[in-house]
Amino acid sequence: QVQLVESGGGLVQAGGSLRLSCAASGGTFNRYAMGWFRQAPGKERDLVAAINWSGTSTYYADSVKGRFTISRDNAKNTVYLEMNSLKPEDTAVYYCAAQARYRGSYNIDGLYDHWGQGTQVTVSS
Image (cartoon, rainbow, N blue to C red; front, top):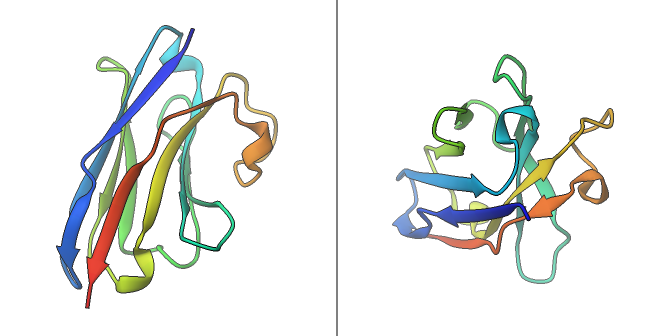
C-alpha cells in the first residue's frame, strides 16, 4: 500500500517562503508522476505543480509560476514544493498525489492513484 506523508506546512507572513515535502513509501516511487494540489475553504482542489517520474518535466499553475518550484529526489522517495514570495491567496491545505502510471494529464485529480493527508499553509497579510 502506497503511503504519502506531507510535511513543512505552517504559518508564514506574506512574502515569506516555505518548503513542503512529501515522503512516499510502499510503492515504486521512481515510476510515479507526482503532483501538488491545494484546496482553500469553499473552493475546489486545484493542481499547483506536477513533475514527471524522472524530474525532467514540470508543470505549474499560472498563479504560482515563477514563485513555486517542484522537485523530486527518487533516492529519498520524496517530492518537494519550494514556495517563495507567498501571498495570502496561497493559503490552503496542500496535498501531494501520485499517478502510478501517467495518464496524459496532470490537472485532473481523478487521475491520481494515491493521496497524502494534506498539510496546512497559512499566509498572513
